[in-house]
Length: 544
Image (cartoon, rainbow, N blue to C red; front, side, top):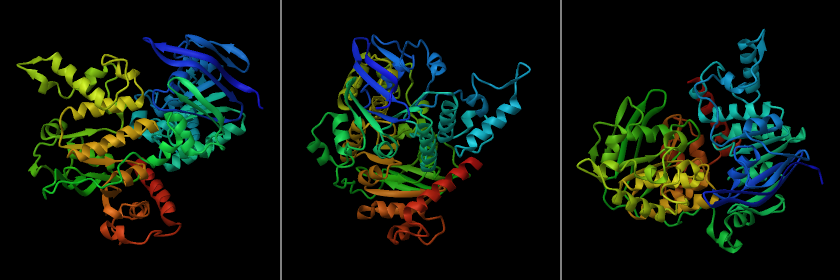
């Protein structure tokens, strides 16, 4: 057995009496990729933060290269050789790409920062990761995927013995994930230990050697990943019998089609939405009690369509109707008054308010409705918060716990609670299960099913084909800001969806014809077409 480069022994950590870690052991070997998995709230992030000096452990020790270490700050851990890539991009958005890449270790000449050398080095480094951008631009002008690649490049550039990657692929498209895996394999060949945290099982089995499974703050399994079946892994994470997991299927959606309202008038209708360089005549409708999926690759215009519907992005043309009534003034406030709400893709930047409590985040949008003569009722707020914390099974020490202390899955449930307490007619969900574990994902999927059965109209945006296929009654497919396919009922299959994704605007396969055409258009079949489409979408996004 190769010697361990990093060892954690009997680590314990509590917050306000809640045990986040209980006697956790972890051993990383030089030159291995070690998966760290578990449900949100299992203790993965706390373990990483204890190892890297964000938190001090209540008990236990951390040894690096056989030497006991106690890091007071992440900077100390980085200087010792432990580099971390966080799920949420942890850089300075107002600074340039190059300055973010070299922050704290800028090349100098005659005592001054050598901007020319820094820009040249940054461009060369990012080129190796397939990112071709003006490195003098502010980081915030890049898409989330490009920002994540900058964070990865920065972490790998340091002389690290251990690289910890916390959900590094959550914002990356297929081509970027492939590039990242090439980098990880290079690190493995160099004898660097990599901790890889992901909820995507396909990624774990492709890149990882061993796995440690955590549940409720404890380690429940450590071993070789190759000998562990996928359902067994899920069973360990959830703490359920294997037979129960095997019966559940790929998602928690009910296989039965939702009973859409017999009323011919849709709850939501968007017609000919136009936005320069982004949307081109996009039309769709959603009926009460129906889940309509919005499919497409990164850059296809899915999020832009949802934001255009609620008025968060201005359009050059088109109209939106709710229950047959046109929204003349399109802005988020008017959309909410009409009964249309949206769960945004980026919960950190466009969702939670981290400094506020769970209670304050839930009731935020509904406060005007709870006020009488300008006076808020604490009793009404408490009743609403308790109702949705119970219904959505939000795991928190209490309603007054700061929302930033919750796991990603529970933060997502808080955002859902915020919009559900508005009693909406239409719910727009943009990647509702991104970055949350299999258990929380199943709960959110089951909730979407339940809401549709109760008569809510749902527009579901998802990058996961299984989620889109099993969760939707119909699917509208976008590419380059245009509708290129409609799939309905039994037509909603992976084969037909991939073929629609490969179709180009103006091709014979467009629209309903695309849904009925044979798969494998062009060379290389639908998978090759999907990869090429992702590359085209990425290049176009960078040009813009």
